Amino acid sequence: DEIQGRAVRTPRFKYHVWNRGEDNEQLFDMINDPGETNNLASEPDYAASLEEHRQHLTDWLGSTDDSFQVN
Image (tube, rainbow, N blue to C red; front, side, top):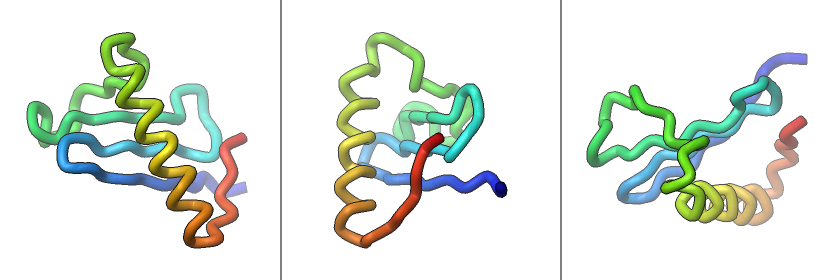
């Protein structure tokens, strides 16, 4: 199985998720961290943003008939 990922971008954040791996989610603040050096996915202050971007990705997967699955 190859590692696959998907990403969504909003004006402030970029969210990545991979189909496997221990830390398979990444959330970056593209305004304050354009170099994507600080993963905010596990930060409690960003839990709402993380959930919002999970939903954006879920909606996009559904609208494009993408069968991507996180294991």
